Amino acid sequence: MKLISFLRSGSASYGVVVGEKVLDLMPLLGSEAADLKTVIEKNLVPRINGLLASHQPDLTFAQLTLLPVIPNPDKIVCVGLNYHDHVKETGRDLTEKPAIFLRLNDSQVAHGQNMVRPLESHRLDYEGEIAVIIGKGGRRIQEADAWNHIAGYACYNDGSVRDWQNFTTQWIPGKNFFKTGGFGPWMVTADEIAPNRVMTLTTKLNGQEMQRTTTDMMIHSIPRQLAFISTVIALKAGDVIVTGTPGGVGNKRTPQVFMKPGDVIEIEVDAIGVLRNGIEDDHA
Image (cartoon, rainbow, N blue to C red; front, side):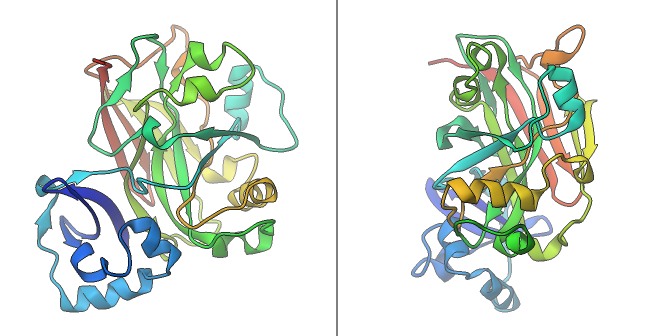
């Protein structure tokens, strides 16, 4: 099942995607859940199949403005340096534990919206990744139980302003400029993607492939990430874990490649779909 968040006639809602159509779930579940995060928190996802049996999806994507899959997560936790080829190209040391940093909600845009190159830098880089959406929260989650805490998966572009990222050893400034990341187009529920399924991730800039990997190449597996993060942070339903990018980032190419206005960046995960964003300059 594919679940999305969106604006319809200026009002926030959420729905389920069936083919090229969408069923707006707000009129059906709104008294119980005002947003997709609450649907996940209250475990209402299983009810959606029943709603599809009695309600016909009738909205087109042209009628909607997509939002980041979870517009209001309590937290977005990102894992860095999680593929060997990316560790190698950065010249950093391989660490026993995952490298962790945080993103803020307003650093993201949805599928189909433009990512924004800030006024302060032209070094806006792409990072194709897979996002994990937490379904059941908890502390000190065990690796063996981690899959049971996952609601679903989405594509993610951990857009990075490289000079601001590298001013110090702390990466947060380069990872949180306004609207520099992409999150979408939808969440594919965990029942559609078996635990340990090997997924293929690719990044294309203006149609040219820049990154390609498979999830079995991760240094720290998804269960290991959840176990480590939940030891420090109490995870909640709707939280987002961004699982790391492979080699091929623009900053480490010769010559370097950075995203510029007019570019189109696509993050594709074979089990999920394609996240597509244009690039524009900040006009603020």
